[in-house]
Image 1 (cartoon, rainbow, N blue to C red):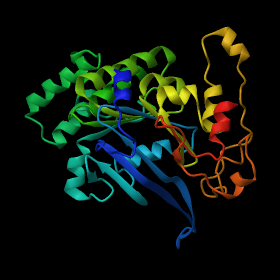
Image 2: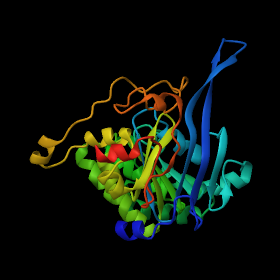
Image 3: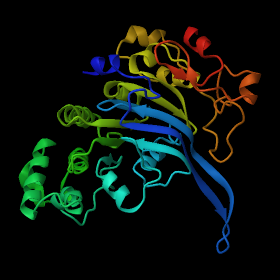
Length: 345
């Protein structure tokens, strides 16, 4: 399935209209000082000019270390945050401009699976009530029809229908995430944002949830934005991968091209940390250790924002921000002055 989708994928800037088209998205949070007369003294540039698109039925993997802005992008798309600037075009409608009832109706088609299954389910409600809540909000049927639909959703995600009147504390972490998945697909969305959906789970359970998400994508024709910091998981799930660093996408490519020939030194350093299940290859590999920590999103470095940690940085990197542009003929984009040297090294 993934190979067919990748082969027929349009240009990321969207000649055929994609289901989701994010254009120059910015999300800045004010930093205030003072207890009573609060004044703004700066801004956290959580997302600082991000553009990407996702064709219908595809999965875009969004990767990067903690603090890079991945989760903020997901929450801004579903309008938990109102964007500072930019456009979020969903099926040709700009979500960033919608308010009130039009936004509420559009949210029916865009759902989110949160990272922590222990925090995303209200312990005061039964799992049946939690799964049925969106169906009651959008009035998708009678009380009995919704209850029958809830029982069927439990079957779909691999849980017994008789669990419908139990509470979240009676389930394991993996079972809770299955409940969260059932709630996300309850009103037949077109687009699902999966925000680190397996990072809080045991390794033995992760593959089950990932396989469930892939099966649901095939059966329900879902489109995913899959957020993760784990490149091995993203490679399993995504058709295309966008790599984020300090609020910006620094590389965007087909999954296989990105792993075979990364064109940004940050991507290359992340890939060097992914274990390979072959001791001979693993022994010969060179691990790239980045110095320092992620800079503050309040005080963004000048020029290329990765230059403070980049082993290839030169004087131009400190003064001129590299353009995010096509680097070869295979729909591979990167923001680096020395992209070809990254691949060759």
